[in-house]
Length: 295
Image (cartoon, rainbow, N blue to C red; front, side, top):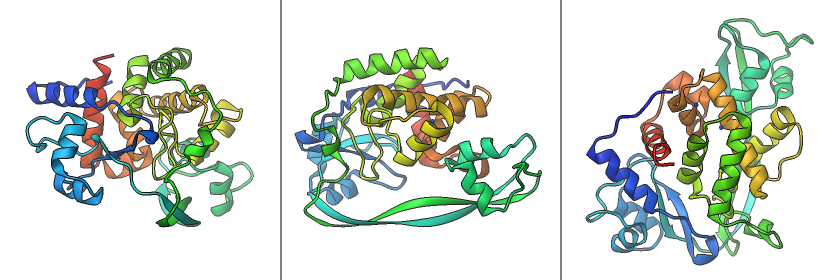
């Protein structure tokens, strides 16, 4: 959850200016965040959120008529109606081919899966040795939800009774945490801004939590195998620790290449290494590296 520099022309500068204008507000304000996907248009997004293109342009200070939107960019949109969700879990299995230099723990870190789960699934020996060229089945636990009216998306109730710092304090926490972990604070701040606008109260529809937008299963992995203590993702300091620790791992795995680490934060490093960066991932990386130069 990095050191190539991105050269930005006039268009890059404009994108940076738009992104810096997208200050995220608490969900109580009636708005939420939507990350633009490849193929999206402002018209399709407006239709999905029962609003108008003009309203989206106004909410996000978009230039012109909103034609200049990019995959990976985040937009403020009207919050969806309350929903009640019936949820379940299912296991999706992918295949990973062991490469030179791999170990079970490195593979588990990249895949965000408990190494014990991988070992049991593949009947590995007690030594946990993996062999170059070996094909490992990687089970991923995926949350599936069927929504009906009457429940709020995410878990805003988890913040009830908590003292949640404002964005300026969240940024300071992330910066100091990055210093302790030996991560470029500008990079950590850029990722947090791109993910949430430093809004610790932001919980996505997939339950990614806080300023660094950490999925619960990723937080559990980092707690057990990296930080070695429980991380409360709803706490600003623990959330920063989780996000920065993930960036530290990604930077180590990519030998310090910030662009690849940022891509891994967004797409998953194993996917980036096996399939390359998707078009929306490339846009995400460009945005983050442009923002990094502003902090």
